[in-house]
Amino acid sequence: MTPEQLPPEPLTPVLEAVRAAGMATVSLDLSGVRDKAAFMERCARALDLPEWFGRNWDALADCLTDLGAASAAPGRLLAVTAWQEYAEAAPQEWIVAQEVFTDAVEYARERGTGLEIVLALGTRS
Image (cartoon, rainbow, N blue to C red; front, top):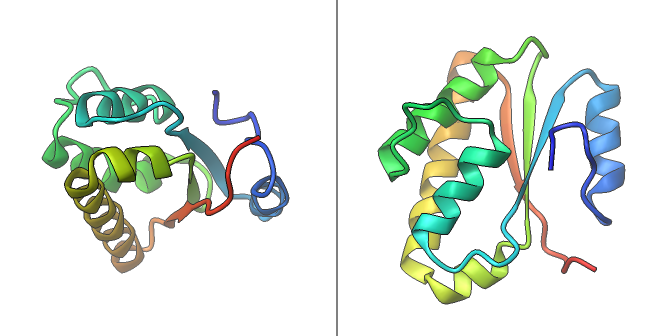
């Protein structure tokens, strides 16, 4: 899914409002992801991460902290959908992923680069 495509409800109205405010949006669809390797690959594709992305937690953290700064938009919203299967299949990895997301958002807020990450709670249709 490209950054310009909208995921299914319920995030569509949110993403449309965010775009109307001038922010960029990226969708990270984790459908079918059950392990770290698949999670990292999905992140690499969805976020269009650089070739040097090492597909590990530290590399993901580095890339996420660059997302807001690399955007011409005043901020970026990363919408994570269909994450529940991964969280259930690999709960410890999902905890680490959430910590990486949280740290990246806090880093962006401290520097004013405008990265926000939301987790969709609904199921995909």
